[in-house]
Length: 395
Image (cartoon, rainbow, N blue to C red):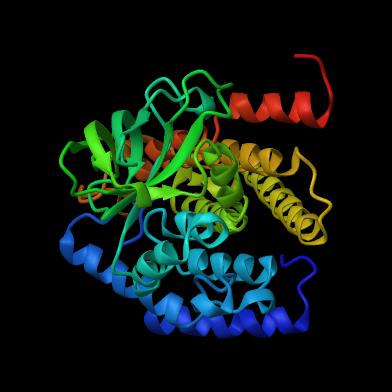
């Protein structure tokens, strides 16, 4: 279902769909947010992202002077683009390029914008997000990485970051570090640009239970950043990070498309496996489970479109995004778990195994699904935000 889409947006959807069909790289899709498996795949993704920027789909909300469409590009346009890329199971923008671009556009200097935005638009430069730390995941403001200012205006950075997707491919990092240890924890943080080739930057890929290494831990050992690496004013990094994150509104909308595809694939699976000697799709319990998952996906889609509508009118509520994120994360786990239950013994088989169902798709989906209940704010934190800030319940 597409809720409240105008004829203009539906025409735009057809345009984007045709573009994606003609230009998306031939890369086998995987569950979740994944990095390129090798340099050849990375080159395909970079070229793809460059085409999307050139067509005005990525970066459409940038000011016209930097290649965007300005006010002519709305949040609804971003939703349509995200949905169509997800529908084709094509790669999304690699890394944190969009995130840092908005930080530079809103808070950076003319020199920074001139130097870095072109590399993001061309797809040449990959950025990673250096926010999370081993003890500062959901409570990001408690981060401990320090950036001490030297007499010449440069900064000496020491600390550790973790869960850094694409860190092993990144040219640059978007870093949050503490610059005032005596200030309240939200007030003493600054934002920086990190050249990932600088001495003292040590990127160590983390092998995940999916068998791949999509994210990394990054050690910063006395890394010297020039004064011009500071984004905006010192000690306002918390505001800069939240402002840039606020631009990312189409993610759950596109992920909802993937959930819907998952339920459709579940229905096909239920037709091709047996339960009690009959196709599983004929079993009343299976039908009930499929109906429940279908209804929940459509409810999430309606919620996402309502959220986008409120955001575009400036009436967004504090609980809107957490509600959608929580529902998406938990639904992904439910869909993948039920697929493995339907698959029976074949559910343990992975990509490349001889008798793997859907080439091991469901094993990959199941192993990755739990990550979404942690990444971007854990389900527990989302429930706290909804209850305390949205419903005004006591802590």
